[in-house]
Length: 130
Image 1 (cartoon, helix red, strand yellow):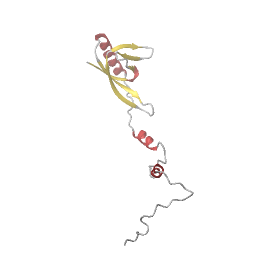
Image 2: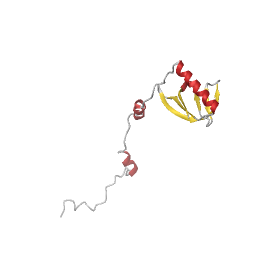
Image 3: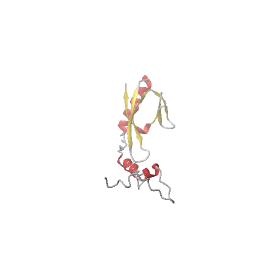
Image 4: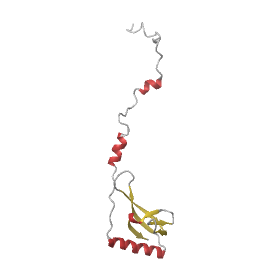
């Protein structure tokens, strides 16, 4: 005879003035809790690395201007390295856009490629002719 034979087959005791907790409610007490909402997002944002914008000299700007004129006159495929400012913190990143020059919008000071990508002239760092 075991120590619990006298109670093992008894029904579970239910309180008369409290209902039994649902399984969802019982499991919720073990759910992870974030005391500081958005803290992890802030940590990730702070750790994200951005690059400084390169400031070109007048000579470098003249070289880019010549490359652009060559690309327009010969209708060549070009690869433009340009700076994209970050929307939430100082700095940004450098990307490459490839295409043919559709037009130069002097009012907005930008280059429009045939794939309708618009690049601000002040953000161009290099032009590679194909």
